[in-house]
Amino acid sequence: GTPAVPLPAGSEGLYMVNGPPSFTESTAFQRDSGKNCKAVAFSKDGSLFAWCNGQKVNVVNITRAELLHSFDLPKTVCLEFSPKNNVLATWQAYTTAKDGTAGVPNLQLHDLRTGKCLKSFIQKKMQNWCPCWADDESICARNVNNEVHFFENNNFNTIANKLHLQKVSDFVLSPGAQPTKVAVYVPGSKGAPSFVRLYQYPNFGGPQSALANKSFFKADKVTMLWNKKATAVLVVASTEVDKSGASYYGEQTLHYVAASGESAVVQLPKSGPIYDVAWSPNSVEFCAVYGFMPAKATVFNLKCDPVFDFGTGPRNAAYYSPQGHVLVLAGFGNLRGQMEVWDVRSYRLLSKPVAADSTYFAWCPDGEHMVTATCAPRLRVGNGYKVWHCTGRVLHAHEVPGEQEVWQVCWQPFPDGVFPERAVRCPALPGEAPHSLPPCQIPPHEDEPPQNMKPQLGGGDKPVSKTALKNQRKHEAKKAAKQEAKADAHQGPAQVKPPQSAQQNTVPAMTTGDPELDKKIKNLKKKLKAIEQLKEQAAAGKQLEKNQVEKIQKEAALLKELEDLELGV
Image (cartoon, rainbow, N blue to C red; front, side, top):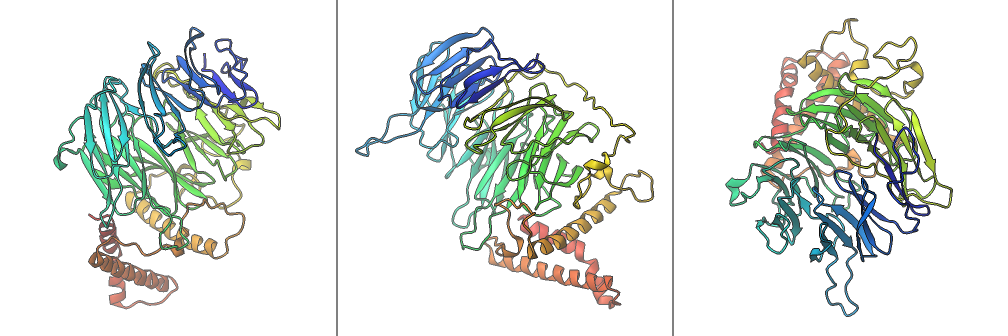
């Protein structure tokens, strides 16, 4: 069968619903009608479920429908199971005593066999509150005062290892089997760059021990994503609001760092924010959603070369199915909830459903069904959820009455391999060529179509050569820049711009911290601008001098030089 959908709803308490096709209330879980079921968690294999109802934290075994433990922790806000169900971690907001003395430990680790508390820590911030385990629980780590502390085999009384780097502010353990790798982020300070380093546990000694190192000047915060096979990490580096008070919202760059030591900057053909990046479960491809609206989406391989271009559209999120055979591109949040469901094996568009006002999306472990939900506090009206089939049909919709709220919806997880990949059969529309969309679905505004729906030149479906693609990309980048300049000049209300997007014309000049280097970069940009102007004159029919033609021929070399300088090669 398909997994259950538990539905913690403020006013309706907490209950579970059987998955498709029945959607009846599950008897495996006794409904908790309390009005305070705010924190819930499933174990990784879906067999255990924990929740706090404002009085107690309860842990049940769903398969046997029995209560395993009840902990007296009424103020619990966050819960998490360790990967093999040995430990339950709970977090309550940190409070200091009235006289200003330190508060009591608010992060508890409970042994799920005995119900005893293994260890309590003081953990002030809710962000990254939970310790991180390797999948086999051989090690567990937490970030404490700019160090990463490692414990082995759930013995929390001894710190088995420390990774001490000046001000480590974030780390991520690799998924999968031993040996565990660790990606760490150290923010730059006093003119020194920020960097991400990969290590293999427990080899932390000295600079030579790192598997890979990538440094960058533009990063106030990073998001690090391991692929499933633990061979590489994608790093989205973001700058925060410019300190000089210029009206600019920061910018993002995407970097690829392999455990083998290789690293690269992923060249994104459209400028603007990076909204989302997702690894395919196959670990050899990833999808990025980026660029000023309408945003582009592209699948890249491990060489960071584009594999498939989805054109542009109103989207800011990407979700691969657990089996990796279907990809959903969606526009949630400040966009209208359009989803595009793509068969990744053949890059065929399966459906284009719209889930308006969604604040949450998740694939069912079966890779065939999806849930979208509208939850409080993000949106307080129209709360509820819908279960979809990937062909775009809504199979079940539940909306709560106006004054009630839904806080969270999630699928019951299952171990990998329980649901094998099933070919997606999509009913073809009558008289429809397999590669084209029915006319009504082609958006009226000028979105760039996906690469397999572009009208081919010369009629034949000949593959485009690399050079042609390169030129096409350059041409598109120029065209986009022109359109953006136009759009920026008279920005109508119709354009949805996310707050983090950098208004390009107000971006302060990039500095590398090295005045000599800055000078070189400035000069190169000047030369390239002059070449642009010459090309425009030529396009307008002006006869160019020989030295001007030679200047234009140097463009590629100059671009390469500029790229190398900016990447600090």
